[in-house]
Length: 336
Ligand code: NAI
Image 1: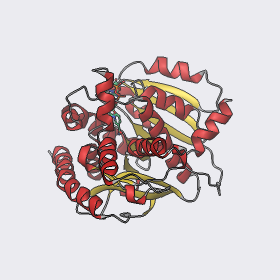
Image 2: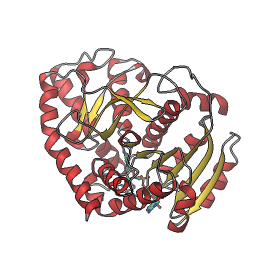
Image 3: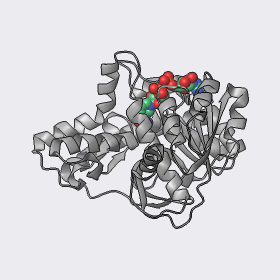
Image 4: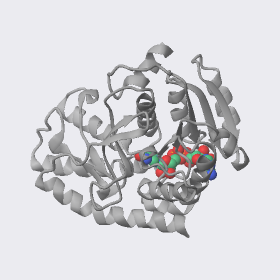
């Protein structure tokens, strides 16, 4: 049964065949004891491309690692606790997934998390530069729009920045869009294809419903309401959890899907496509999410902006100033 689940996790974002079969990757999860980190680490433990799972946090990782290590999949699992063990956790990692840092409480925006989380991203990026400068780095920590530029600046300072290997994880926005559309159209959400571009907060999240397959058949009012629901879906969860945090289980699923896609690209699989927030020259914002083809060296091709209708062009116009501010904040933080 585990084999079946593991296979599903590895192939859920596509059904293509490997051209090589290295099956031999080290994945590090930073923030592995948290609400996202634990279920994400579980899903990575089930991924057959992973042979070494390295779990880092400032608390509880020995326990989380001992627990996961009893699962009968091939990867070894090691826990690393506290900043003095961060370098060892990251050494030689092929993929680093980062859900470390504080989540939102009701009434907070993602930007409110900046003061605490910016420093965490800075420290982890500094260690990545030393221990695994060629790793694919996937940042889940909010505000994603700002944390990714921080990591880029830190990696640049260390002389190891490769824009094809640094990703902000916006997969949950795609996952949510597929879920909402699938249920609205009464089709299997797994069969829904929809680009969600831009950034990962409020108005910067741009679901491109005009390009949805199967065609989204709602009225203009439905399109407006669904767009806002996708943009505010994180807040829906924050409110429902009433002070106990933000999305964790759906985020773990989305993070495992994205990390799984990075591994599939690394492993030589063709046509692995994900939307992700990366350095970009597609718009005026220097970081922007669009569909990307992932390969052995990270981004193989940026597929650029999908075709936008007038409604979506307006959404894009509203997103750009906000994104530029978010990016500037990150660059300024890292420079000072
Ligand atoms: P949590 O509080 O349950 O877990 C965070 C973990 O990070 C804790 O175990 C904590 O000990 C650890 N941590 C704190 N400082 C650390 C450091 N310096 N190094 C390593 N680990 C450290 O929070 P949760 O719910 O897991 O959320 C984590 C982050 O993910 C938040 O910033 C949240 O806003 C973000 N998030 C992002 C989403 C996305 O779509 N990109 C969706 C949902 C949440």
